[in-house]
Structures are given as C-alpha cells and as structure tokens.
Amino acid sequence: MFASPQELSGGMVVFDRVYQMPAVVRLVDGLYVELSRPTGMEWRVAFYRLRPATEWEHRQLVAVGRLHRQRQRGLAIGD
Image 1: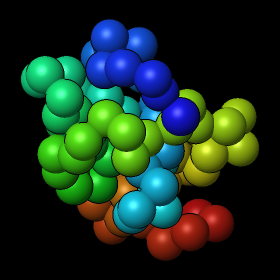
Image 2: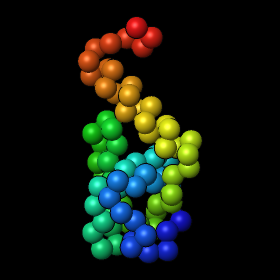
Image 3: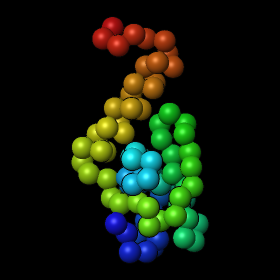
Image 4: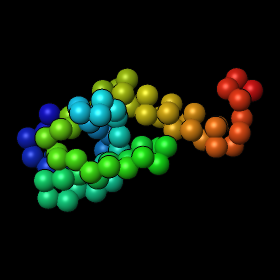
C-alpha cells in the first residue's frame, strides 16, 4: 500500500484492491489517481486503494493488452 500519492508516478503499474485489477497510472491529481488498462478502461480512484503490482500482475496486464490487440485485429487465438 502507498503511504502518500507522492509515491505514485505516471506509467507505474499498480493494483486496484477494490476492482481487483492491475492498471497503469495515467495521472496523479492530489489524493486521486487516474488509471487505465490496455482495453481502454479508465477510472479515477483514491490513492489508498492502490498497492504496487506484483510481477505476476504486471505480466497479466501485458497479456490482457496483447489479447485485446489481437481481438481488435480480428485474429483468433493460436493463429
């Protein structure tokens, strides 16, 4: 868990404990943080809901982005 919003910076991968999802920090605005996922989902949360993402969660976020790009191109998995 983060002690203050100053510990967060743009591009950092974090885990939202309420949504139970990893995301990338887009912007820190006072006590609130704007997050995004590769699927285009964006939301704003209080910094204290976040914790640093684990290595596994970071890989999960990368995999979601890869899958989303494949689906956007219309490719089937495994092609």
